[in-house]
Image (cartoon, rainbow, N blue to C red; front, side, top):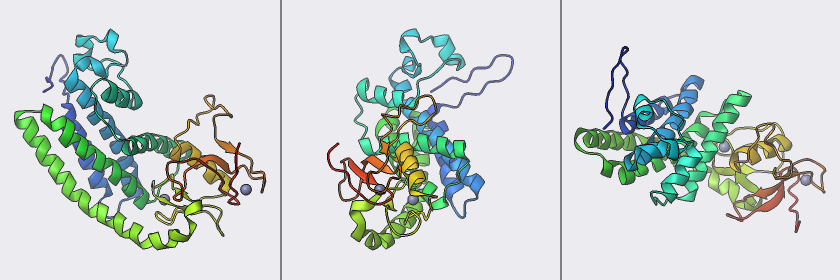
Amino acid sequence: MTETRSCESPHVEYPPVPNGLDYLDSVVDHLSGEPSPRDLKYAVLHLQAAVEVLLKARLRQEHWSLVFRDPGRADLSRFEAGDFESCGTAETITRLRSIIGINLPKGPVDEIHQLAKWRNALQHYGLTAPAIAVESRAARILDFLLLFISEHLLPGLTGEDAMFAGETEFNIRSRLTDMRSVIKARMDRIRPLLARDTERTVQCPECGQLAVVVASQGPIHCRFCSEVFISAVKFADFYVGVALGKEWEPGFEDPAAWPLRQCPQCGEAAMVLEAETVAAPGRHTPLCFSCGTVMSGD
Ligand SMILES: [Zn+2]
Ligand SMILES: [Zn+2]
């Protein structure tokens, strides 16, 4: 339980677990009914905040110094005042795994990294994502976080904190069921449409579903969230940045590290060296998103 400290001006610090749950509650609120673009924006921002707060809460349960960027220089008075630089999400995940020994599965961790990339992309390019894309991405991360709360956070709570967290977690979980069934129904509907093109079907950077058939007739679009992408080249770039999670801030870019090349067949800069298709999950397929050529060897 975190203390509430007061000095000249009252300073209220929310204990991390209820605070994280409050963010999750807000995500579900913003996504229910017919979300407006503003609802979607806050759903994404609050989801990101929930991830950070909840994962760090587990580090805090282990020891408060672990949330400092540099735990070797942690200082209790600065921690209590909330005046310190904390570690980032990627580092938090590393510490949960290596220091506490929590076996965080790769799938949801990839989703979390994608969420951060995606959020940056939305802010940077002023993109607006389709509602179903936000719901689909949020539902998977919510699933992971709720499990994380019950397995790794609730056991460390006592008394009222535990009761409140348990009730809220249960409440969010039941509201999530509706969202999940909408997503499942839609995926069931499009699955037969994708069955013929598994070699050319890749993940949609918007909704995170394996539902974009590249090198097909007409504009590239997602069969799940219906997002239409301007061109194969633009889509390939977006895919590398978000679905593959590569860094794209100018200055950090190493052209050799950016797995996108000019296609020897069609000449478009749409050859994604590390594409992951439905036909070959977990493997890198050098696939041209414009003409469908698969490059063999290097
Ligand atoms: Zn999509
Ligand atoms: Zn090509």
